[in-house]
Amino acid sequence: MAGVPPVKKPTGPGEAHIHKIRITLTSRNVKALEKVCSDLMSGAKKHELRVKGPTRLPTKRLHITTRKSPCGEGTNTWDRFEMRIHKRLIDLHSPSEIVKQITSINIEPGVEVEVTVADVN
Image (cartoon, rainbow, N blue to C red):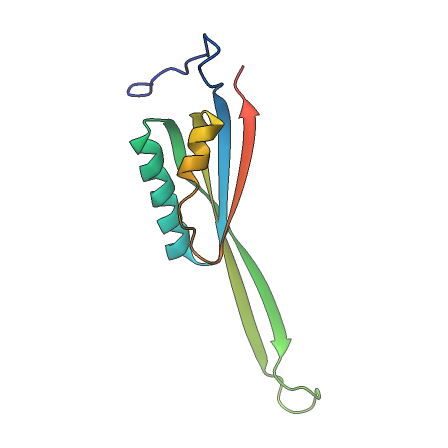
């Protein structure tokens, strides 16, 4: 791919080992989620890392339909509630020390962050 530097393997004892890191962001609030994504991306670009994402995964829509009447008598009227869960994936190729620096940003309330680390062979 053009514009993407190759992954460098560590040659000496002073170099850090490159990891493949997947950051999964989950939230019900899209604006907060996108803000955290843009902050992570700008931090990764500042350190000149290989970045893929943010990949937008399909939105989960949780539905609950319930009767309005507590006793069950009267007109059959219903309330419909919905909760949407949005998810983003960001893949990084970098040493784990740099990822600690990038992920030390202020994360909006309501945004869950999950970091998965794997070695690149």
